[in-house]
Amino acid sequence: MCAEIDTTEEKREVVPPGSSAGETMMTPSALKRSVFLSAMGSVIGTFFFALLGGNIWNRYLEAVGMINQIDLFMAITAFASVLQIFGSWALQRSGKRQLYFFGLLGLPRTIWFAMITVPLWAPEDQNIRVLILGAMAFVYWVTSGWGSNAWFSWMRDLVPERYRGRYWAYRSIMITVVSATWGLYAGYYLEEMKLSLSAFEVIYGVGVVCGLLDITCFFWVGHPKMEVKHGEEAGMIRMIKAAMHPKFLKFIGVLSILWFSSSFEGLAGYYMMRGIGMEIYSMQMLGLFGTCVYVVFGILWGFFLDRYGSKATFIIGMTGSILPPFIVMLAPYYGEVALYAAAAVGTIMSAALGLSAMNLLCSLSKREDQAMTVAANSVIAGAVQATGVLVCGRILFPVLKSIGSHFGYGPLFYAMVIYAIIGVMRIVSGIWSLRMPEVEAKPPAVIAVRMFYTTNPLRAFYSMGRFLIAKSSDLVHKKGDTDLHPSARWRLG
Image (cartoon, rainbow, N blue to C red):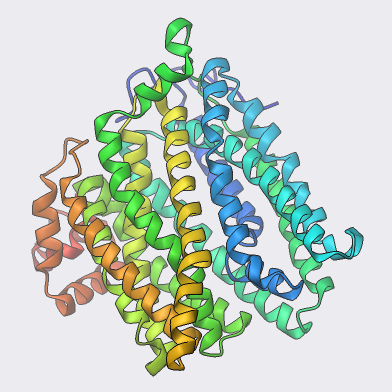
C-alpha cells in the first residue's frame, strides 16, 4: 500500500512555504522522501518511455514493413489523448487517484511485450498486422493518458509551488540524460545486431521491466488527499467549463500552433535525417548532443522560472523556437552540421518551454480543477497533433511528391518545404505568446524577456560558465555578485 503522509515522525507539522492553500500538510522529511522517490521512479521509467516513440519506434516500424504507416501510428498516439476527458471526469468525481495511477499506468505497460513480438504470432497478412498493432497501441495510449492525469494531479499536490520550477528542472535533466544515454546504447546495439527483430525484443523487454519498476517506487510516495467534486459541480459539462476558463484558452491557443508545427516536424525530421544518410545510431548521437546542451541550461531555466515567472520563461522559449526550423533547412547543403546547430538552439528553447508550460498548467487552475485541466490540455493537444500528422503525411507529402517528381526533386525537397511552413507557424506562435496572461506575482514578463534578448551572448556564456563552477554562497551578497552579468544572476538570491 502507498505510504500515507506521516504526521507522527516529527512533533510539528508544517506546510512547506509557498504551498497552495488547502494543500495537505506533511513533515519535511516525508516531503523530501516523497519528492525524491517520485523523481527516481520517473528516471527508472525513462528506460521505458524512451522507446515509445521517436527514432527507435519508427525504425522498428520500418523494419517490420510499416514505414508507410508511421504517420498513422503517430496519429493514434494523439487521438488517444482525446479520450482523456472521460478519465479525468471519473477521477475528479471519485478521488481514487492512486487506483487510477497504479491500475492504468502499471499493468497496461506489459502490452508492449505483445506489440514488439507481432511478427512472431500475428497472421501473415500485413494489413491485419497493422490493424492489430494499431489497436494495441490505441489501448495502451488511452490507459496511459488516464493514469498520467492521476500522476500529474498527484505531483501538483505533492510538490510545493515555490519549488516546482527547480523540481521540474532537476527531474527533467535526469530524465533527459538517461533517455539520451540509453537511446544511444540502444541504437548502437540495434545496429550491431543488424536491426534484427530479436534485438528490438531485447531492448523493449528491458524497457518494460524498468517501466514496471518505476510504478513500484510510488508505493512509498506520500499521497495528499485529493480534492473532489460533488453534486452539480461534478457534472462533466460544469467541470469542463471550470477548467477551460479564458486564461487557459489563451494559453492553449498559443500551444496549439506550436503542437501543430511540431506534428509536422516529427515526420519531416525523420525523413530529413534518413534523406541525408543518417541511420539509427547517428540519430541517437544527435539526441545525446541535445542532452548535453540541455544539462547545461536546464537548471538555469529552473531558477530563472522560479525568479522571473512562467510567463517570461514561456515567451522566451516560444520566440526562441522560431530559429531552429530555418536552420534545419540548411541540412541538404551542410548535412549533420546544420542539424546539430538546430538541435543546440532548439534544445535550449525547448527546455524553457517544457518547464514553463508545466508550471503554467499547474498555476492556471484551482486545485480541485487540476485533473480536468490536464485532461482538457491533453484532448486539445491530441486533436491538434493527430490532425497535423495526418495533414503532413497524407496531404502535404503526396502533394509535394507530385510537384517534386515533375521538377526532379527528391525527399529532401519535401522536408525543406515543410520546415519552411513550420518556421512560419513558429513566428505566429511567438508573436501570440506576448498576449499570455500574468498568472504569478512576479516582475512583468516583458522586462525579463527584454533582459534576456538584449544580453551580449558572449558575455552571457562567460558569466554562465563562471557561475557553473562557483558556489552560490561565494557570490551571494558579495562584491563578486556585481561582476556577473544579469544572465548569470538568475540563480542568486
